Length: 154
Image 1 (cartoon, rainbow, N blue to C red):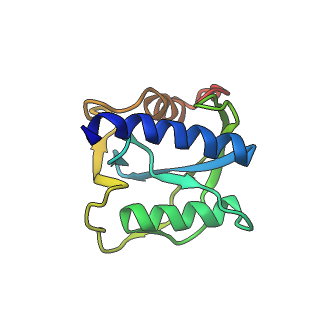
Image 2 (image 1 turned 60 degrees about the vertical axis):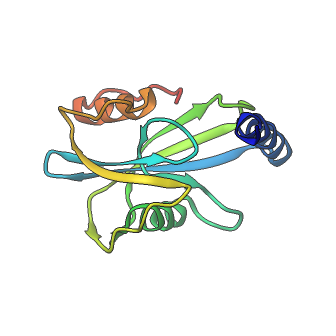
Image 3 (image 1 turned 120 degrees about the horizontal axis):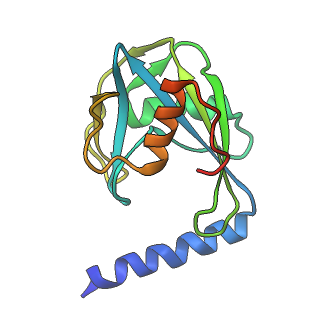
């Protein structure tokens, strides 16, 4: 019975959190290894995504990117990534903005064990992305690969 209410409670709490915080800022990393890209699968939302997360109070976007990348994947950014694009993410409250960085100077560290937040990480060919990759992730990767202008919407 509790499983039925979990998504509802999560959505209500997420909406309250986002409405009470005002504008939110998130970061995502495009990490490339040859012809492969690093993606994560969350435990709380469907699909494969670029690694990243929220910028905390008092934290720069680049600091958040480095922190989230290492926490989620074990990849350590050796230098700040290059800002590639800024997007509005309508989401639940319409107040989210996402900064996408390309990280080219990195080293692999120990892969963290699966958690409730990150169920799985993987490296995938840019030409053979996994089933379930999100539309936003696919779009950001195509924009990078083709050098096209970024869509302002997430």
